[in-house]
Image (cartoon, rainbow, N blue to C red; front, side):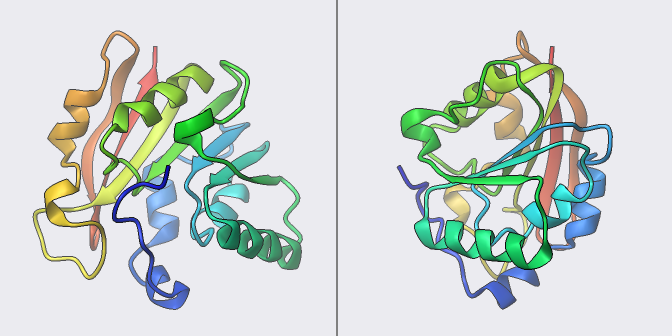
Length: 189
């Protein structure tokens, strides 16, 4: 099931909306991570840079055939071998990953779905204890050049309400990722 209002502009324009290296640093994506899952990789804006920061494998999932082909081409050209891209509808069939098998899950610009807990529950299932979920989303407090309709964008306080504090704790409180996003990190207990 495709997340509503998830269309993307041309890649060149899309890449101008993010300071990728800053976002990855703020979200603590680094060599302490062995295996990482990215749900909804799109153009691979974060996939390739994140793959160079971790020690293990980056498992990248997206629902779109064309995005899978594009990412596969980019990986081949860049000679990156630690990324496993897969076309999969996470909301219909989960990731297919073993329980407690990864250190980190990236949920970037995807929680505007009408059932965001489906993503959070799958992330919890596949995360090892002390594993982290990095979340970014479009801000709703300022005008942005893209993103889903403001009315369906999650605010940091919404995400805090969705978190099951029996399963997670807030590792890094919501923070601004200039110019158009906010981020936060939660950790599995």
